[in-house]
Amino acid sequence: MDNRPIGIFDSGVGGLSIWKEMVGSLPNESIYYYGDSRNCPYGPKKPKEIKQLCANITKFLLEKNCKMIVVACNTATSIAISTLRKSFPIPFIGIEPAIKPAALHTKSGKIGVLATLGTIKGDLFNATKSRYTENIEVVEQIGHGLVELIETGKGESEEMEELLNEYLNPMMANGVDKIVLGCTHYPFISNSILKIIADKADLINPAPAVTQQILRISDKNQLQASAPTSPEYKFYISGNKQNFEQFFYESFSNFDKEIKFLKI
Ligand code: DGL
Image (cartoon, rainbow, N blue to C red; front, side, top):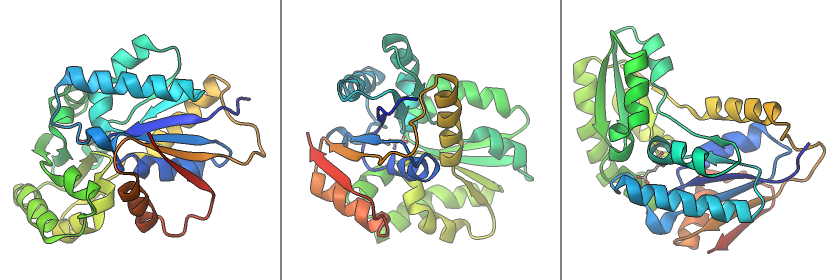
């Protein structure tokens, strides 16, 4: 049994889609979230810079005594997780676009992936793609500008609608019937996406698979918190703390546990 917190990070608010799932499935665990909104977006950055940012965040979370780290960012996972695993002696759980379930369940043989430039160019994504999509057509689309709009509270704006139409209509015209949300920010715009894809395609959200993996790794390494505990939820924000907090309460208005938001 281990009551140290689980660390989780993302370039900003996106990892909250994983955090929410974790709070529900791991009710005894304290969770410390690092939102690197000062350096958001990661997607267009050079791999070297992303690796450095991820290493700095990992050091920070280790100083806060975290027992494992969830890389709740597809871009950071794709670019940096193997280096992190080599450099730090704790378990890392990453998130990858859910190509495998999409490829298994498509009926049209065509799946769409909406993700950042960093994820789509990353080795991990390309290795997963060649492993699971031999006879499947994968239509890739970089979500230029989407993360920035979500971070600035414009998730439901005309600008967002225009971009989503531009990115998704060609996929629909091509006969894609599964869309993989390959960025942890995108579940927060799923309503707008669903309006466009209507009954032509389904969305695949990988968050539940991540919590399953956390459970497996905790079990294997005997890292589960002992019950009953009163878990601590902390958020360390490198950029605009007020924006982050506002996004949090707009997204999870019913959340009634104690939370601390800290500017770093
Ligand atoms: N939430 C992120 C991801 O899953 C990062 C997006 C970004 O900062 O570009 O890829």
